[in-house]
Image 1 (cartoon, rainbow, N blue to C red):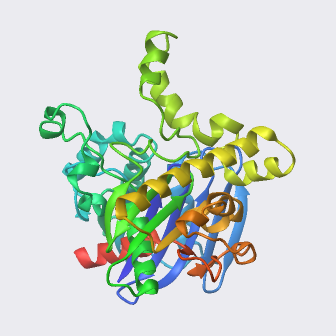
Image 2 (cartoon, helix red, strand yellow):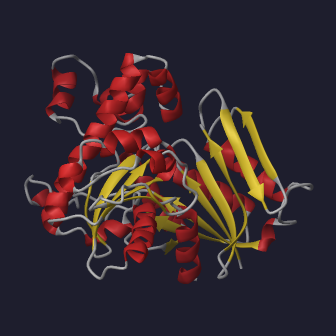
Length: 393
């Protein structure tokens, strides 16, 4: 059975076509820097590889590019869209409605749309992927896999906010957590590597969106993103943690309206607000060239991650391994070095030479003397989505 997986993120579209249940990758690729002046198209099959720079206006245009490549006479891997029986989609926010993988119906789409305000950078792009897929792959079943599902094991003392009880009881306002598909995938890989019955792992997902999870005995017990995907770590365009009184000061004292403040915190803050760049590659290059704002932003980014590592070590009363994953976590030796420097007290010792590589598989980057394993594990959210979609059917 051919299962196409579409991971439509805030600024990128990852895709893979699988033959299931063999988990054979027929083709894969990435549409990156969606909405920026220069985007990128990547496509790879067993016979062909394509990389080109081109402007990608929006997610709809990116998805149309993906389908065009799949059907292309020269490099395509299918002759008809009818060959694809299932399309699995990553959906970021499932709220309290969706706690497991779900077949897409009109009602499901309406509920995903109702959660737009909680994940404004993601759920609209996720739903766009579903809508475009329905129009193209008319005979395929559409499946939604929710980022929030893995974090359903977080205990109440960690997910409940210290606000009046009615907001949880009546409105389900609580910490939900995100990037769950990625955290689940890499934590399972780490547990298999550790071969420990009782494990304490911190998984660090660093991309345009960033999050960190405390995973104890294979279950998520705490997580940096909350009711919506804007808290916690510093991200590409999102602020991460701020004092919420700042929001009221901006509105009540400086005269900004709530819509502007929300957009500013979601789309104009984070690394973009600090440097003018949202892509870490640009920031690292500028920092290397002497840009002080970019170097400060890198230091701030790493400092925030360190604080969360310390808090999660306390929450789990120990630590066996930290895992770096996703685009930045897998490829930026700079961020990994900044995070792991001066962490010996917690048993974390990075090997600078090992850290210099770009990992294509699970890789150790710690010193032999390090009490805590430091691992780089490439995430494969697409494979996890394919597995869950296939198992559902």
